[in-house]
Image 1 (cartoon, rainbow, N blue to C red):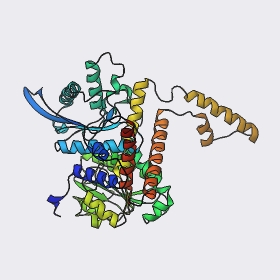
Image 2: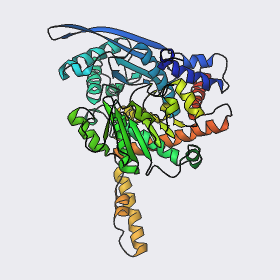
Image 3: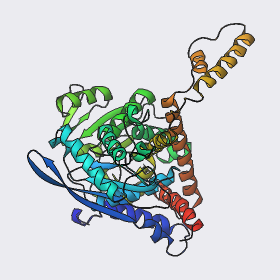
Image 4: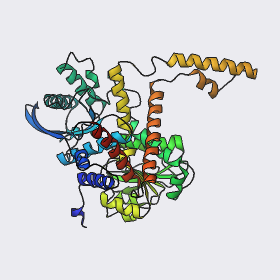
Length: 471
């Protein structure tokens, strides 16, 4: 098969769905019902800019409304198109189901290069896009809840929330119309790091299962493992930083668009990130070998490969040369359907994006709950738990006949704040979902890999909801 014959991103998602659906028993037609994108909206709108008008094209897809609201990011990118938006919306449906977040899947995009516009211009464009989505019922705290994605961030989410609130001044839950907002504007601690943190927690859970670790040809924990990260955006940066600083892993290579850095002894992620922020490129970093282009480092020997940027970076052309023992899919759709088959034949253990990339939507769910409840996590019980800790400490010190010092004392006397609770909830979510996926894999002899198991788990949960409805 030539590169021009490779399946598209949407076809990849649908083929994975079909493979999983075939491995489980479903009533006739239900698989097609679950797989079908329910609605997609294309908008074209003019914005007055620089003494004239410019017309922009955007999309918002609602893949499944088996539960409401539907959830999914909005990306600003020149390569965005309707098919990509549909694929990402479908993936969101399955992702939310896998990690037990009660949302349907949605996704949006605006065909734009945000770097070509000033902040004031981007605000004007974003507010107009919000108006168009609102007209058509594609945004609202109980209906459709966007979030940041590629090319967007906290500030744009604040603009969208503020515009929605202006359009619906009596809706007390208006700020819940989007997630990923700044903390001072209804956001939540830990949202920026959430997807990268979820990747860390998912990989940690893999290492808590010795049989899985052994099947991948590894042993031990994350400590000392050689990791290659492709993409140093929000997800790749946080995941790599946590692996290095908290788990003792070696980040031996980081790949970016302009090239890659390689150091077998390990890179300082913070130093590389600071260099990239200052210079705008990877070249010139003194602590590693610079490799122009850098794509060949996807095939460099390592324990774990973390594609954390774009879809379709591992294809049938390079899959046979991949030497990593584990691929941790931090991005959406980084491995094509053809490459997935090749890698499974090579016994490469793949932690699929539909599971591993779900940290963002999980913490978005926490933010949405915070917006609807109008109370900060920890406000009701933090001091109570500190008092409980003090009571336990008093009993311990009385029994020991001496004071308890150090980290143990601090742990008992410090009640959980919002960030601690968010991380705890995310960790629990990733652990529970990993166990459910693993159980589906091990209990069904028609399922041979974790991606198929993750999709099958999702389909089963969604099917159960549809079967309980009157369709």
